Length: 268
Image (cartoon, rainbow, N blue to C red; front, side, top):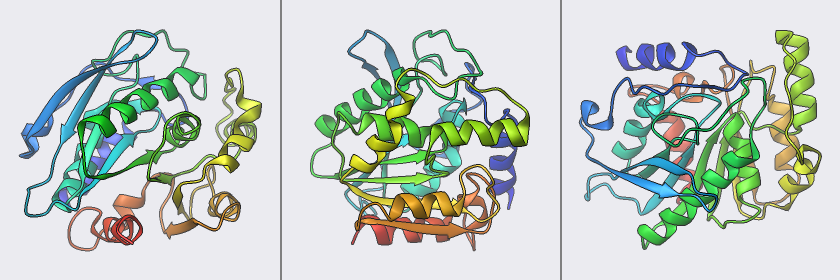
């Protein structure tokens, strides 16, 4: 329960539905007993991305790597309890900060942008580095909220074995309209956003779409529409709100039921 409360505090201490990077790290993986390797990944356009590689105990290793594409606020440490739960279940996790976040290179950000195309370049770069550096594993993306848009764009250029997305954005234009209606916030879409829905349909990799029954922004219905586009896509529902899957799908240990479903998907 203590872990769950800490996760809630971290994730909801930032303003949702607006880009809000945090530069300072509140903690690092070793504070939670995790050994990690810090790596700087350089993007093709010259930005340095701070990256953490966290491996499971050899006896638990399920030979599956997850590249974490987080949501629109905070930085890597805000997701450390998710990472710890995943590595304890056998996953190798590669986390990184987008440009302008954490200890990655400076990048001017307008918080009213829904996302930046450059974030997709960041994920593409880290995904490529991961596949070269970690041999013998299946490698996929675990994306949350804004990260699902970033993953959709990155996978137009870089390959993966699978994609897991929670709070998946189906249509950026419709998403912006929901934010206006529910939060009274005017959000800006970057160049090329009109191509997003066709790019989403083109993704050929196995997809698991995680959706909260109380989520008004990225609804269960949205995820089901995405799943219906291809036969190798499926949905997983939880009882919570936007990106609350780990919190609501906890029985004994943080996110244990969530990870059980992820493992069914990734190990089939």
